[in-house]
Length: 237
Ligand code: CA
Image (cartoon, rainbow, N blue to C red):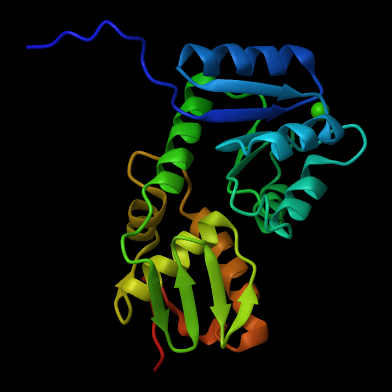
């Protein structure tokens, strides 16, 4: 039997973009203790060169930042091929449901309200990284005129490029590989977000809405059908 004496491997690189030094340090400390490699930036201007040098595996981004806000930057990241696949967790002092929806709508994959426990935050970081890492096996899947490539993370609709966030990508991939069956919100959370994730079922609706909006210009939003009081179905019929 082997007893490993080596330190736990690095679990991934996390970039913290937060202007409040105390929160930044608290987050950095908690993440480093968990085996993550951490980089810190006080605003978007500081974050950009860090991201350009080496893509982080995940970004913890404060909503309210001096200069370009975290919300604006998350939106810009989704429109940039270099950054669109980096998972983002938005940190915010707002607890409004409408703000939460807005955060997810503009490109964040998850959202956490201050004050939060480091335990909850770490659980979400791990869940999101797991989601990003446990990629599907078939490189290319298609349905109707939609095509997903899991190696390049590209989506096309009738050969037109479609911009999707990592969560939308996973959701769409799940639907394409599991058509014609109705899934409840809880089942979709398990399948797409992963088990033991503290995500409300309402999050599913937000991402479904976002995915429909993304597919709408190509007419494929109709593939995602709402089955009243049950959940959702992906179907060409
Ligand atoms: Ca702030």
